[in-house]
Image 1: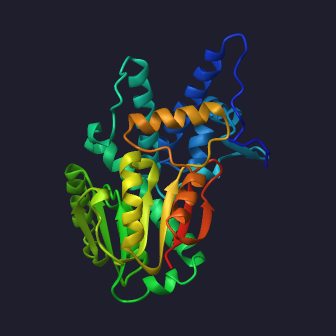
Image 2 (image 1 turned 45 degrees about the vertical axis):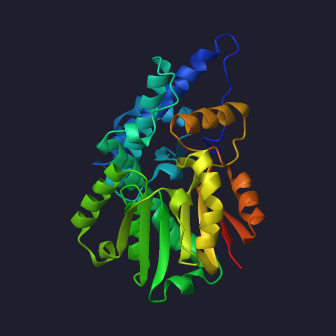
Amino acid sequence: MSERTSSTVLSLDPDDPSTTLESATWALAALVATLEDAATQPLADVLAANPQRTAVLEAAGLVRRDGDVPALHPAYRYPDGPTHHSAAQARLSSLRQAVAAAAGDRGESGGWADQEDEVLRNQGRVSAGTGRALAGKVVPALPGLAERLDAQGSSILDIGTGVAALALALAEAFPRADVVGVDVMERVLELAREDLAAAGTEAAGRVTLRHADVVDVAEQAAYDMIWLPAPFLPEAALTQALPRLVEALKPGAWIVAGTNPAAPDPLRQAVAGWHAVRNGGSAYDADRMASTLTGYGLRDERRFPTVPGGPVLVAARRD
């Protein structure tokens, strides 16, 4: 396979830097359209059917070739059609937010509360893949956690549960565990209730939803695992909530925080900060999260990269 990857640093045209940025935008558009087509067609057929679009992806490092056969970067090969659709729509939402900013929306808004139901559903359903990754890769690698979650009455807390796709994935993976999903948005919890009812499974019945802010978590020694998606939470709320979440862990239990990797260049650092503020999130990266968790007395800090350039999961446990 070609050694070209999508982690290549963007090299701006010195004569007109905007032309490079416009090309990168078109490359993202090509990725979104390819993922959407792959929701209903085999990915190999999608790449072959539109050679010009595929050439854009290849030039951007998002397609590699094994001989004459193109293959999409592993980061974007999802397990089924619905997940391809949700991933496409999530990136399309990001593009729309960028267009809104370009059109003069200078307010520090545009957060989740302003999104349509379909956007919330698509963004949330992608997180089922994170739930499966937690169950299949992270939990087995954290000492004692798999045994804890295999015990009757074990408990998992899903912060910012959204449409509860991740919570449901965890409930399916750990049939003796109860999963509590909390979210500050009642509207998204209504969507979650609809999705859980539609699932109609025993696992869905073990997911409990709560309309609550993360800063209001007040249980003591209640959970065997806590999932914390740091980029989606406001910085002030995250800073206030972290000591409460530590107290909510049972002795020996683990918190796993999804974080963004430390941006490797100034452009991505600046974009990450602007995007976080506009969406009501935080710019906590893996290094900052790790130092914060250990600063609260947690130990055995571990990191789990996902895909190249993608989120880093930071885990630590309470004594």
